Image (cartoon, rainbow, N blue to C red):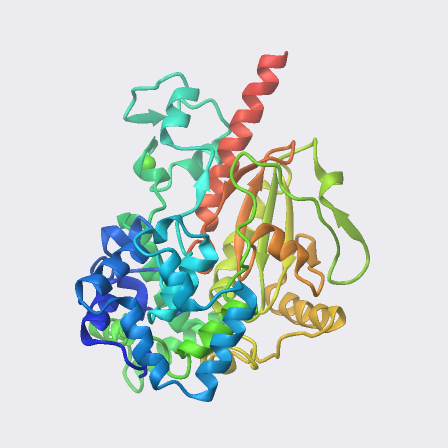
Length: 451
Ligand SMILES: [Ca+2]
Ligand SMILES: [Ca+2]
């Protein structure tokens, strides 16, 4: 498996391995404790890597010089594409942000991490945590118990189904732990591990395990025997986990550079921040039957925006979690999904795991092509909320930095109250749902105050 760019020193490679998510499969939102480091979890890995490279004595510039000496025509083409898009070479950007990479725009942080050999992991480059108006402190204060360490059902004035979403571990009280969605949280790590097991049993990767899929998995393990044993599950689920990408999924540096320039790894824009007004959009539904304009949805209820695309495996498997939120809160909030640029088209960072799941499409070149893929995606995911298709110039995907997948909660006035981290790693429907509940709590309190 090709892990590093040519000319990379062993010390660089060590720094890379230390930075946790580097070797995770792209589909792996979850990370296990040994794969995670505090720096990475805090979204500081770019800085951490920079330090590791610096400590190696050569510095990133040296590694890049070596790389360029050996670079092939393909390398040069990828680097020229970067220069055309960013207006500067990678080396110039490295120099400009030397020692202060954390201050660089997200796109530059991602570019430099890719140039240094990142294979895309949580906390690397622009993959950071979500941001929210709400927190444990906000909730405790709002409920009139600012110093409490836990809130019981009696202390939270809310319908039972709101409370149930805040009490993540269902122990009857809400604590800071219930609201912690960082990658170092034990619940998040365990849930992530279970999600990865789930994907192993779900051959068509639609995030739904049918009785037939469940049965096929069981029969494969049991063989001729009348039952399976704990070790059968351990071997089937753990073998190969954490060892890198699935065969045929790992990207080369050039594929990542081209994917970055094309907006397939994510938008070069950053999207609105919490507290800012969400950009307006007017997009047609996948069936062409109507146009939905954000401005027309405002003033009524909170709004949940879900961005995603067909070729992003984690989006496909995590999307049912958004549908579940829609089932629970569809009468209390407005839900809209927005179909954006493909993350893993056959002419970009193509993935064998997609091929095995029967997902193989080139990057749409026209709006009509994109609608056709959105319809194919709809056929698999059976999205029951309006599915809007972004224009082929990615205007809405860019305005929200929605590629490859992302979640937002807006309050009824259209201000952002929750913005997930960039997908796939930041795509956390449970985190979004808690923000939605707290937005509803705030709205409820405001209505009471107005009476
Ligand atoms: Ca709890
Ligand atoms: Ca399935």
